[in-house]
Image 1 (cartoon, helix red, strand yellow):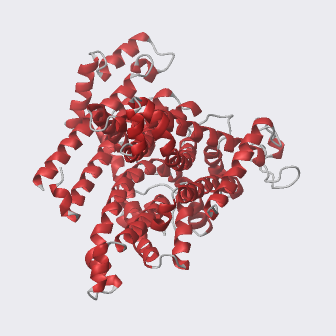
Image 2 (cartoon, rainbow over the protein chains, first blue to last red):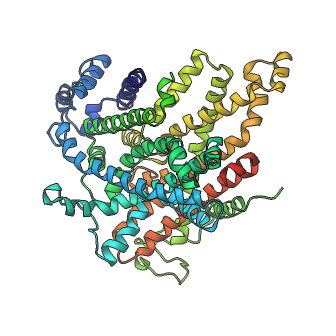
Image 3 (tube, chains in turn yellow, purple):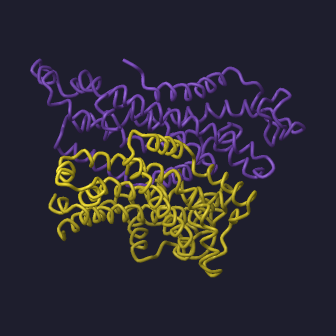
Length: 315
Length: 273
């Protein structure tokens, strides 16, 4: 197990290095000078020179990369050009909206999808199964931000149960904060739950056709017992993969959903960074999101090993 | 052999929007750049079967032109994925176990690890919002998908005897890949292409909703939704119609993909049921 974890950790580090190189390169290939780009067309040459110095743009490519990446490692994300505050502070404040939102959506999606997928698998080929599959087919096709708009019309305007947008802050109490995050989380969760339910269903059906399940049934277990004792762990492997992948979709998807609900999260920060040409903010937030996604992939890999001992001994 | 119902239904749905998009190249009921403020937010009727938007533009014309944008962006993004990903996958399979294979596959893993939407946002942010950059941003993430599918499928073809015969006949790896492997994995690529196509439609809608896709005056479904958000209480029609267009197009493509898979690979049919 330790050896497995160590190899995954090396691969995590390599991915992070590669990701930071890619992001750095994308921002570097901006035609011309980032400082000039950020200040716009009418900037005075002195101002551009001063900003270059400020941003640490005067050094060579390698030096600049090392400064940026090294800063990230120590929690120094640079200083926002427009806000004049450390990017780390901006991110920290907004992370407490985007992260809970993604987790809330992930929880909803998982809690909804697993039982529904199991039900469809248990009733495969019957009306219930076709109904569930048809519904998930629709769920996959719905753009989450459009679903969010429909939810606002229905549950915030026509029946004002939830707020239509904005965030009261966690200081206002957990309940009001969760209420503000509920519609965004539901909107994010629906398409993901549809995918997850389908994966759960086919994983379980696949497992049920295995010889060891037939053996378990032959020795007198009911189908439910066979699934619980022997099928579940095996069926969970593909499901775990998808849950891990979904977290990355949810974090990224949160960016767009935050726009629908005017939630001051990381998404809004990125879009402000884009419109204000605050590249330091954009670069850092993107890197942070990529880091989160790669970290989750790593954790999912570890979770595999816990579910399936065979993987611990593989390469 | 009977065509699966899903395939027919999906093709019908998608065909409808494809036809609308093609028709919009030569004709729309009204010009989409023609503003008619006096007739803004008109209800359906009076020469506007689905009414007009907040600038008095005909909704049917906007939806038709929006279909063109969505389909063109997603199709070109799939094209990028196939054009780059399939040769990469075939090369990796032809040189299985080599350093080249390792480099191609690890590069793939890396791109997979990125949250695609975030990188698409970064690309459009840096290079400026436009339909072309949206195509590139979506297309890049199609490359590893096709590379992986092509490699996996090609690996199952390489051990076959007709490949051995081709090698004995003196054909090189590249030629075998192009002449014998590719035709045998084409059906899988078509199925994957349909799936990536539908994901491309959703991605394009998302990008143009946040203002990073096709720029005005080019109509796009995502931008129509963004515009409609302001009027959503008084005029939900403006938000419902483009959303429905997206849902039906994506649904059509997904049904087509499922149906095609069943049709082209009967072995899977049993497994899916």
